[in-house]
Image (cartoon, rainbow, N blue to C red; front, top):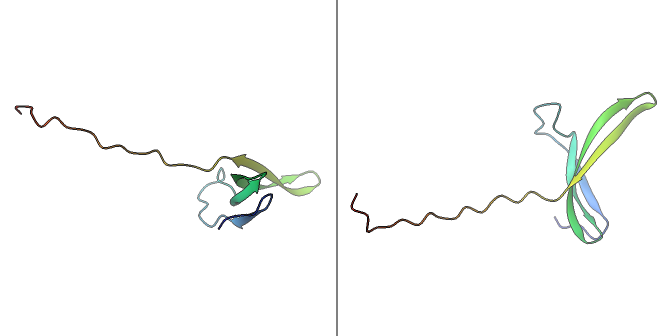
Length: 74
């Protein structure tokens, strides 16, 4: 799903396995740049609130094949 500029979508994190992982996560478009957002539900003295973190989307490292020298005698 692609978001329009300055919009986004956040969903409940159904795959959360520990307290350090966010309660909600999603993707937002801020001034034309795609970002990931993570939200944690926290309890404060005035009630519950969201704590947020924004980061650039994760890009898996590219794996390059290893060249082999077929002229080796072993």
